[in-house]
Each structure stands twice: as C-alpha cells, then as structure tokens.
Image (tube, rainbow, N blue to C red; front, side, top):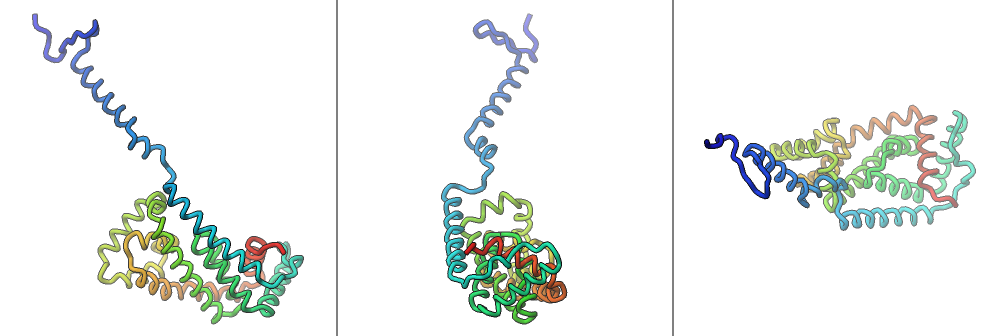
Length: 269
C-alpha cells in the first residue's frame, strides 16, 4: 500500500522524516543562516553609528576647537576668582552680575572674544545652554548689541555645525532620527523651487528643532547659502525676544548664566 502524499518517508541513516517536517526544518535552517550571516550580526550588534575614521574625525575636530577655546581663555586678563562663586541668595546673584559686568567693561574686547568663542563652541557641538548665553548677552550688553551678538554667534555656530555634519553627521542623524529625516527629506524635495521660504518658516516656527535642522540640512542637500540666509534672518525674532526678556530678569537668570560660564568654562587661574 502506497504511503499518503502528505507524508513522504525518507530513510537516511535510520531516520524517518515527514515532508511537512522537512519543509519546516528547511525554513528554520534558512532563518538560522540569515541570523548567523555577517550582515545580520552587524545590523543587530553594531549600534554605534560612527565608523572608526568618523569617530576619529569627530574627536580630532572637538580637540582642535577645545584647544583654541582654551588658548583664548588662557590669554584673557585674570579675574578675581574668589568673587566668581555659585550664588546661593539673591544678593549673591546681584553681586555676581556686578562683578561680571565690571569685568566686561574693563576688558570689553577680551570678554566679547571669550563670549563668542564659547557660544560658537557650544552651538557647534550641540552643548545645551545657548539660551542662557543669549540671556547673558541681553543682560550685559543691552538689547541692540546683545541682539547683534546673539544672531552673529548663533549663525556662526549653526554654520559650523552644518559643515561638521556634512563631514560625519549622516550616520548620527540616521541613527537618532530616521523617521524625522525621511519626513524632512520628502518636504525638501517638494519645495526645491521655494526652499528659502520653507527654511525661513522652519527657523521661525517650532516645527522642527534647530538642532535637527543644523545637522540634517547638509544630508538632504540644502545649499549652504540658503541655509545661511534662513538662519541669519529666521533667528532674529526669537533672539530679540530672548534678549529683551533678559532685561527684565537680570538678577536671577542672567546671574545663573554668569556662574555657569565662568565656573564651567573659565580656566582656574
């Protein structure tokens, strides 16, 4: 009597396997081979977005910027470091602001150089705290000069971040924001003819974070001149509000910024 078609008996070395079982076994073997393949292991275990040369390039750029910032701080006139301490009371805050304002008046060029270098450094490497730097500019330099400083430094820092991302930013952005990057790329493709207007809209409104725009713009092939103009013009409204607000709260927020800058970034004499 013939065996049923659904069960095909295969004798090999005393083993009997049904056809259904053999098919499932083959699928399991194929799946196991795929899981054991080098590409599968690489995508599964290689979570760090940078390759070795990209990581080395990032460290090198950071080291160069840090060295330049340290040299600028080292050549600045010494301050009375005992007066630059973390404030604990409102009177301490006011005294700290007065000491910092006095230093800025006595050494205006050196102070502005240190301020601009710190702002651009933080903006380039996405270090949180630039909002406080903007508040500090308004508290110490007034609305007009503070606005000019904030817009200049924010644009220079964003441009520096643009070129850094163009060098090594693609794997980082694809790793952190894959869906947002696809959305941004699609929107840019739709608006190539009026790209400057769209970039101005993004800078003025909170549709996308400025950090993401700085990093993703070179990846989606936005020309630098459009990025630069949109950043320069689009940051003016928010910068004006920030600088203006700082004139109303100088005793708290601006003094906290002062302690943040001098105690974290200033070298110990």
